[in-house]
Length: 168
Image (cartoon, helix red, strand yellow):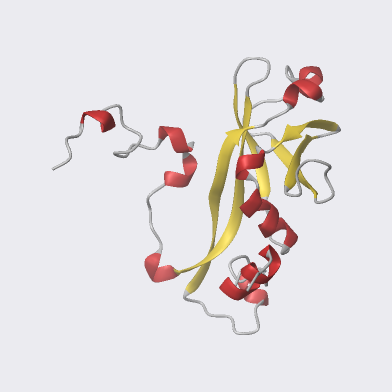
């Protein structure tokens, strides 16, 4: 049996955006023990920037600036293309190897918010993407992993000592 992506997302509950909901108080079965929490779900460099407007606005943009995300479902090369815009400038795209889940979230009506997270040399600008999720207030954590880029989180896989670990 062959199943397409939309049908798969419906089967696992993402097709109706069960993970991303409107504000809790607007829900028909509002539960005060549930909280809405913004989490970072993506952080990486924008791709294709050398072909678009980044050179024109590189001196103007800064970390913390909000960016718009625009879905290009009819893109010639990538059905899951998501463009990044800042003010009137088109900066580039999310990498094709990382955009499928985010595109499906956008297609399902999920609200994603983007922001410049780092700025390096002329063609090095990264963005973070956040979304709201619903959590049980008893399970809320104070750990702030979503405030760091993924390559800055300290864990065993990202440490310099990872390759020194001996397998038993």
